[in-house]
Length: 406
Image 1 (cartoon, helix red, strand yellow):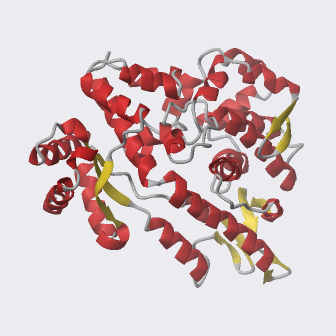
Image 2 (cartoon, rainbow, N blue to C red; image 1 turned 30 degrees about the vertical axis):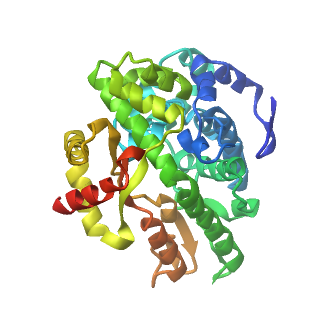
């Protein structure tokens, strides 16, 4: 089966993958945007998790070829797992998992198992590699480490596709070279990179890997953590929180697409406050940043203290109510975003150096360039208070004073 893709060109998949693609669960991913609400900032960011799933399967095949495992007994299972790796994603999934936690991560067994129990169950079980793929997706301990790493490791097929796809669809003129695939190998049973040849560091291979990670940093700075996207996501997350208090079952989100969820919230079925927030997002009447406390200005310890204090939903809601009350506004007009620190797990990829195998970010003697990039990434962490435009600018002083009390 040949699929024309704007990022990779022609993607060739085995004909038997059609039985998986033409299921209700996979087709739903056409209605779930890969970048959530980033289209409110980058209008071209309309690509879906279905397209990304096709690209991830293609990238998995490229990795298997690069490491000489395309004929391995686990190769078909890796391809299936790469194709289905996002099947448990709900609309605006990372917003609900990371930025304002409402649900466990989509790749946990508790989320994966129900997502694989519907129409897709039969064709999956009929495929010779179906049971192996289930083991990959559900965390079976018998799966070889390298096979799991191709699907969900520090440097996996998911990363290779979303970096290219997200940059292309947002118009960001950054790219990595496919020569990076030539650095991949199985290192001590794990998918890793080889930066050594004949007892010396390969500077060209090191440059390719670092370019990949610079691109990862840039997209995080410009897209994934763009303040407008974060504001919109926090508004939708608070709307869903409020809707759950009015009877919405969070597990029902698995059957919805992005627009269906926004329409459901805006219908008024789950209360006026959820409707107000969903209407505002739908019309791009987004809340403004009243106050931001980031790592460079506040330090790691202070942000961690705030996160722990505001992580419980009740504590965050109380804080929003107090800030709103001080500004003479209803609490629905204040939203706090208090995400966990961003994790640059890709930096932990096993790396073969002349002196042995180490994580890329922990070689003997350190690596100043890697450390600087990782530190810049950590500096993107921030706690933000967003308010309805009518509350500006007095809300800034109120939020600043309140957060200093915590």
